[in-house]
Image (cartoon, rainbow, N blue to C red; front, side):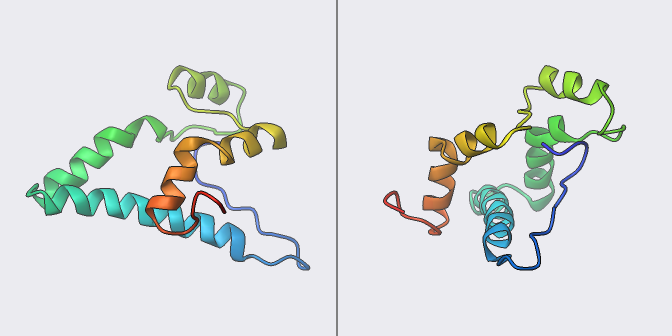
Length: 111
């Protein structure tokens, strides 16, 4: 996590930004796919949005995301703190993340 909100750090001027943008778009598409699936199963739009909110409200924090208290609170909520590159890389390579990219038809298991 990056504090109390999604925080996008731009790539350097000599780098291609397509990879981080692909990650952001995949996250959004996965969420919308989940929401659409609830609606397609017959749930009202309002109830579907309410359910998605209920499933994800544990990530909402309106305090100071840079304070020493936030990592403690995040741990209580079961949120990861990927504060080093090795931790982030291990998470990127997790089965859960691979499944999202495969479901969204972004990457195949081989890729």
